[in-house]
Image (cartoon, rainbow, N blue to C red; front, side, top):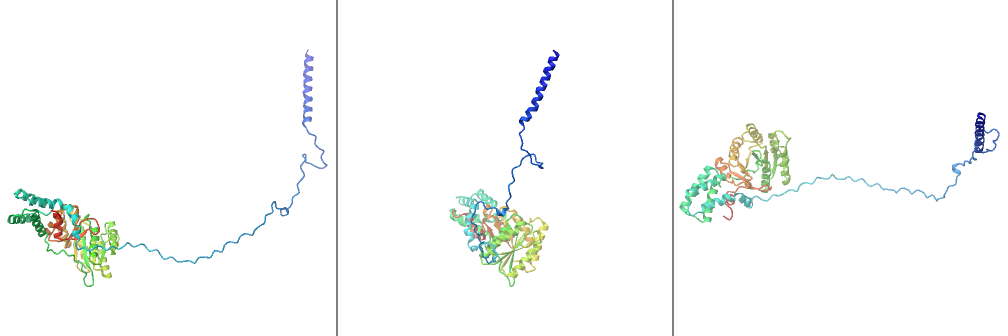
Amino acid sequence: MEYVVAAVILLVVLVVGAAGLVVPKLRRRELPPQSKGSTTTLERPPAVPTVPEQELPPLIERPVSPAPAPPVVAEAPVVEQAPVEEAKPEIEQPAPTAGRLVRLRARLARSQNAFGRGLLTVLSRDHLEEEDWEEIEESLITADVGVEATQVIVERLRERVRILGTRTVSGVREQLAEELVAALEPDMDRSLRTTPHEGRPAVVMVVGVNGAGKTTTCGKIGRVLIADGRTVLFGAADTFRAAAAEQLSTWGERVGAETVRGPEGGDPASVAFDAVKRGIEVGVDTVLVDTAGRLQNKVGLMDELGKVKRVVEKHGPVDETLLVLDATTGQNGLEQARVFTEVVDVTGVVLTKLDGTAKGGIVIAVQRKLGIPVKLVGLGEGPDDLAPFEPAAFVEALLGADA
């Protein structure tokens, strides 16, 4: 049995071995005989002969057109352009100031209406008792006429009513208007001294506290003078407020007036001196010097203001020193006026923002207390809303047109 198994295994081995020898022969292709001396085992295709590139014919023959010649461009002559000038602002010509307060009367009347109507209502009563006269006094004091001036006005009214016995509205209105005009001292000189001197211009200094609208008022004063035929030069001596010089220059450009200015924080007296010097050189009629706003209780600043005036007066006396007062400050304006007058000898008052308060009686108080005339009044924010003060027109506006 062992022999049989061994014989079967041997037979299997022989069969497998014979198959391994036969199968490779079946897969192998019969190769052609190699030439003598050749070492290449695989057959290569015959080489394609190379033809020089220049001998190859073009694939598609196209006619070759010559390249177009570049167009001849004539060089344009170089033209020098003139420098572009900046457009100058159109120069305005303010309307003459004669009758300007009358034209602005409605604005004043709106703010003072209650004052005038209240007085007329009381005075028109059939019988005026002591309480009525006290009411009249209270109305006048509330309007900042001042206690002393109020007592004088009321006493004169009582005398006229007692003698004349007038009770009609028109009659009482006429009496009241006459007393108010008298209290405003219409004979005071309210003209602006702006006539040039021999060889030098008139000099006008504009002073005031902070916030009174001083620089704007200075620009408006320049328009008032130009409207009345004067030539003007501005001096921006407010060197402490950054926008002051620029603001004044803008006012000047509108009316064709030159502005002399200095470096920010510079010496205001030096700027004022240079402004007057420049005014002499160009021959203007009036030099307007805007000064920095200052509180009347600051001694150092007030002394500096005195220095500005002294330096300017090396060219000659200052013709006008105008104090700008805000009408809305009421009786506080009296103290301001008093201190400024002591330092720089104020010659006139410009009362601004009069259309925004019912305290128009401050005009009477300033003049009576200080003996300084109100020369100009501001009745709005427009450039020409500054008017020469006229007592009769002012009272008409206080009492109202239809009273």
